[in-house]
Length: 414
Image 1 (tube, rainbow, N blue to C red):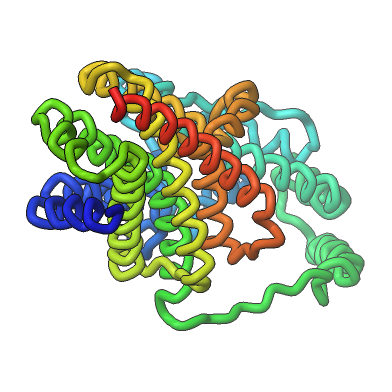
Image 2: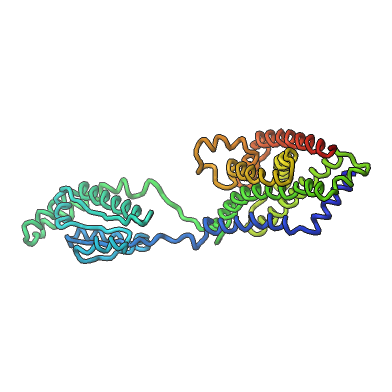
């Protein structure tokens, strides 16, 4: 009898699968959208373009050396430096024309050579979040490096500064002494800089392999959360059949046959479970094909997915079993689904939520499902690591479905 009732419901759903297919497509489209935004790719490896205005009131060798750092290597790709006339920078910044304004004061070079304090002024654009901060950190780093270089090479630099103060041509003997000073400084540093204590070895992998792996992990992470939330909505849609058959008087016609209330309820719960599981298998099959999600343990993954579906079937079935009408259940369940999904990390990553909410996450069955799926897909976890997950979900499955069965059977007998 159970198989007959189950076959009837499955065939009826097969003839009209539109609602289930929509619930399968929603998490796939959401995953694709979020993955396209946050996922890695060659097009994402683009450095920010930071507009930097410079008022150089010094025009010295030191100021040119500082600005020259922005025109070399990756700095040139990141910064767009524009030298402007004195006194025009703040007006440009008031209009929001740049990310930051650097003002180099007059006498900057002399102060640096004399090892005296000097102040660089940086005006940041408050309407931009990251670019001004990057400009600030870069200039601080260059200033720190310049100060340390002058301190280390204080002897030869001091001689250069003294000669510049005299405004006379530097004798060849003094040039030789300064050159010897720099040479000694370089030789002293050879033990620290050559050979380097840390060596970086570059290696090139197959084109796109690293990006593909990272993308698949991201999609697996996203789809695990999306799939469980949509599974709850799918099970909600399926569970409405019980009330719908009661409203259409089908329930009472079935009860006039040899079918008992327990048989009827068992068939309905099994129908909800199997249809929900089929929808999940289809969803993950498409996810594996479209997003290249690596399901390296298919049988173990299917076992855990079945357990998650059985647990969430119990959640939905119990609400419908306790509700007096379909309207009442339809009003309660969206709130239940949203709360469980949010606590479980289906809507927002748990590590971004307050500590109190993270502590309460374990009270949501969705949490155990999502965390287990992510561990299986991303970390290839085995049963030994997911013992707690299995234990919790098995207890929830038995408890929730037993209660739902009990209350549904009582309704069927009324």
